[in-house]
Amino acid sequence: MQESVYTKGFPVSWEELHRTAKALAWRLLEEPKFDGVIAITRGGLVPAAIVARELEIRVVDTLSAISYHDNSAEKLDEKQRETVQIVKAPSYTKTGKNWLIVDDLVDTGETIKALRPILPKAHYATVYAKPAGRAQVDTFITEVSQDTWIYFPWDLEMKPAPTISEQINK
Image (tube, rainbow, N blue to C red; front, side):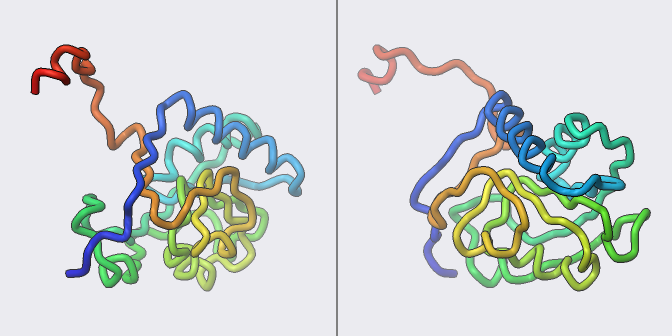
């Protein structure tokens, strides 16, 4: 297994995710009206719910794709990231026409490359984009470097921060 490609960490709070997903909704107002939203599970569920609320879209579906087979950035290698498995297709559309696909992040773009043949007419949007995957999405809000691992709020634990004294006396 090769060494991790992630040298930076970017923690995202619930408030920041909400604010950035809302900004995504603002940007999507420039697009034609969507019939529904498809969240790529699991990361796209929260941003998709926020976008659907802001755009007053009542039909929300899911598409389950597995692209990361290990949740640890330290253990992730390129081969694990290349394989995309679709485990649940959306129920409401066959081509994606007038549908919005929402995910939290496009990293290498492999997930969207796997979805485009299935839903070629959909509009693909993510909150965060990395350079290697940016061209795969139609709309995104924030770009981060390829060597950054984004820690989403559902991946973080709330716990008390150590005091300065505790840090010094370690």
